[in-house]
Length: 71
Image (cartoon, rainbow, N blue to C red; front, side):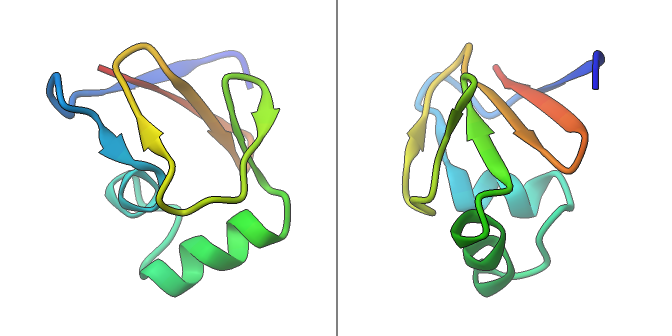
């Protein structure tokens, strides 16, 4: 899990559930919620369980041995 993929979302950022769907680890909001409630998602190294958590440029999200940097 050393490679970080950059995801361009714009200066306004994106909500965590939307990002998980955008990068393809969750097909639906419900699937994203299951990942989050199962403790499988970390934001900037900390566990995150809020699907609506607002991400801003520079945040790093990790899930299922993959990492993304919001840009």
